[in-house]
Structures are given as C-alpha cells and as structure tokens.
Length: 326
Ligand code: 8YV
Image (cartoon, rainbow, N blue to C red; front, side, top):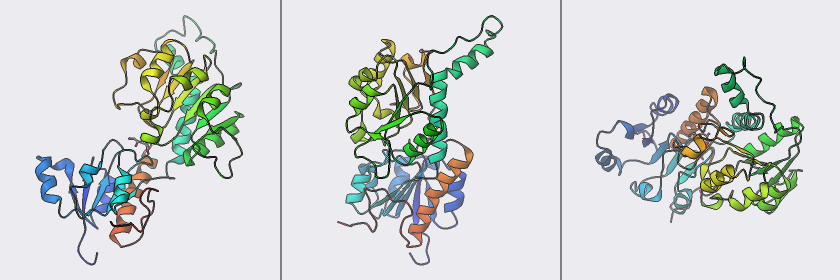
C-alpha cells in the first residue's frame, strides 16, 4: 500500500475517535451519509479494501462482504463479533478484528453492579424513595442475599475471569462451565451446564454469542437452577431462550433475573418490562466514555496496522493471520 490512501467503508455511526483516527490515513466512505445506500455501495464496491464497523448492532454477513471483491479486513467494534460472519471471512482470506481486553474491567464492574442490583433490589428500593413511599414505610427486607450464594459462571474467558476475581473478593464461591476446562483456573469445572445449574443458585452468563451458544440457557437449565435461582446475563440475548425465561419468571420457577442483553435489542419483551422483581439494563456493559473510546481506538489501530502492511493487532480466531486466500 505504497503512497495512496486505501479505501475503507465505515458502517454505522460517525464516531469521532474512529473518523478522526482514520481520515488522515485512509479514504473513508461513510455509508450513513449516503442518500441512496444501494447506489453508494455499488459505486464504492470495487474500491473498498477494508470495513470499519462502528457497533455490534451493525450486521456484516457473507452476502454483504461478497459485494467487495478487494476486501481484506473487517475491523469491528466490540469484543463480541457474532454480528460478523467471521467463518466466511476466514475462508475467503479476509481478516476480522475485534476489540478485546480494553473493556474487561468495565464489563466486570457492570456485571457485579447488575448482580447486586438484582439480589438486593437496589433499583426497586430507589424507586420506593422517589415515589415518596419511604415516609409511609421502610423498603422491605430482601429475601435474597449474596452472602449465601454460589455463582456458576457460564463462560470463563477474559471477562469471566475479571468477574470471578471480583466475586472472590466479595467472598462468594465461584464454579464454572465452559466448552473446555481453562488452564490455570482453580475453580471447580462442570462439563455439563445443567449439572452446574443444579448445584448453584446464581448463574452469571458471559459466553460469546452466535450459533454455538444459542439458547443454551433453556427451560431445563432454568428448572435445574430452581426457585431460589438468579440469572444474570451479560453476554448476548441469543444465549438465553427468552420465552422460556419469561415463563420461568412468571411461574417463579426461578427467583429473579438481571439482564443487560436481549434477543431483539433495543426491543425488550413487554412481559419482562412489566415484572417488577427483575432488573433490566440497556446493554451498557462497556458503556463509559473512556472504555468506549479505547474500543473505538482499537478499531482504528487495527485498520492503521493493516494500511501500513503490518499484522492485525487483535484478529479473531476464525481468521488467523496471515490470511489464507483461496
Ligand atoms: C457493548 C459488547 O456494550 O463488546 C461487546 O461485545 O457487547 C459491549 O461492549 C455493545 O457492543 C453495545 O452495542
């Protein structure tokens, strides 16, 4: 890539860190600015050699990538990349990068916040104060406490480990389930999720989304978790069978849930909205200015590395570097 600026297509919002970081070095085509998106994509298709994807809500499937015959790299925002068909990309010599590590501690903080809110009913207690009800009566004592709970981690990746470390500091026992036992992790490992759900009273879900984990928290797992059970989902809505969860909450087959993610964001099922005994967050695991800026910067840095002919900083496992071009 000597001399001339490579053409990069920006999918999604014009985030200042991404636009500001890329524009001096690449020719940036901003899809969001196009009046006629189809015509815009057609005119850029033969030039575009990389995509910058600004949000995890911006889908990039095989059909989309196929439109760009010179595509070499997809630099995607977010640690999760279930919105990108990375397998297809890998098979077609395209490198996909994500934004891991820089968000671990932020998401782990949110996970603990959501867990505490759910167990101790802090949002409900706050609503009690704002509604002027405290002068009438104390907010009731909560039945649930973190003091006698064991957390079963569903997933023990980088963020899972950061959550588990916090739980340890809180004096909460941790066990885990993941596809394979993790090297160097001393927590008890369960090869079968349903067995772990039976033994614990709290599940903390932090696995990647996508077909391999779709609906893994199903009716059977929720039943095994039992009437004292609390489900915290920090992963993707797709990991939980949402209708089964709604039913389990309605039947009080589990005690409560804290959800940061949903199947069809930003839509939240009415049944969940109407339940006062659960806690709902608007997918804000990593959403501080500082952490989001670090994630955006990694989107930029991966593109700039590629533009300079260097290896990608954070390629996903499905697209090893150097790419195999078929
Ligand atoms: C963001 C995330 O909150 O990195 C991810 O995969 O899910 C979070 O960091 C999410 O991308 C917001 O859309």
